[in-house]
Image (cartoon, rainbow, N blue to C red; front, side):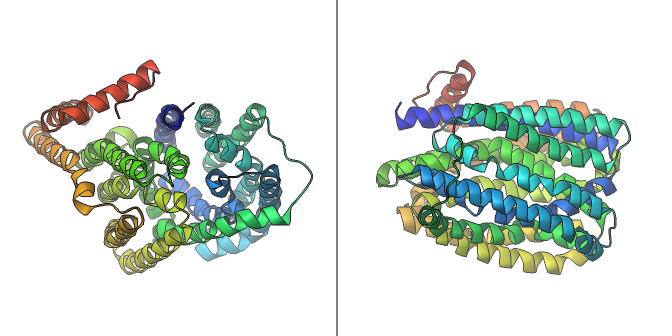
Length: 487
């Protein structure tokens, strides 16, 4: 099977995984948001801040190293597996006994049992990371998709059932643990590889030399992506964090659903083309334009319809999250533009570049959020977005330098998505201006979204007929399951 066919097949299954998982996840999330309080979501969000920090040390960058490495030997797999299992056990023990101190820092005694229960995630997750890397390396995204869907559905059933029964925060704890257990069972049942009782320090060093940069990147990325949650939880409390968590969750779901689908296939595909610079550049242009065509109108639509979406999807008790949701949606547009930067650095063997840029972004973000937190969650969201936009030119300059991208050609990829999205937003605003007082928020959202989608598609069709045909062919290929060659 050719690399192009492997990449396309992997992309199809990655789309199925992300779309299916995120749709089910969103439905579950919406139901839980109506059953649970902002305080409950805030408590779990606080716990997740600490768990996310500890999770940095679990992978050690080995999964990405296994995917990127051209010559992979069985000893590499064993070294990665046993080091991660040992790390998982150690992190579970540390989290269990550190729960008291973490709860004291945030002045939340309820966090103790929550953290101690969720500490089991590290052991469970460590047992499947090598298997997952093998599936990604070989483009076997079908198994990954089925695993994610099953884990999401089964854990969702458990969480919703417990929420209906009145278990409150423990419904979210059970949901997380169930998802990890189901993922582990499925992946061990479908992947033939099994670890052997051996450990090669030489092969460990091979992986470590690449993975150490990813470990540093993840450490820095934690403060970049979690500084806002950490500061809100510490200074503003669990209720404010609950509202912010809802707003951020929407951004997260939309990002996973719309743009990170392609990113999952990007690293193994880019890695195979690292010795073919022209094909590498063309793939970078195409993937960047593809994600922009999808992400630009979607995130701009979220900004316009945020008030109606919050009331319709979550209920009136979550209205305070509206402003933060609109501001964070602006971040989604930048994510589409910069999504493949990390994959470019990794595939070209420059993980240190990722670390340096992430360090800059994390520093700016931390300082900005620290200054803004006194004015509430909207100010924090604004600081978070502004800091990302300030650092973006540095990251883009590094990509241009590495793979020799002409600025004009790169910027050309965004012309059609930007113009079409701007026209779409203008039409939607006119629609809302004349009908917002007469239509129910739900009907307003449905009709307005439909009109916006039609206007956007028409604009793309007029401005760039070839791109429209490629998108149409891609969508048809996904539905029919056939190989698409135009894109």
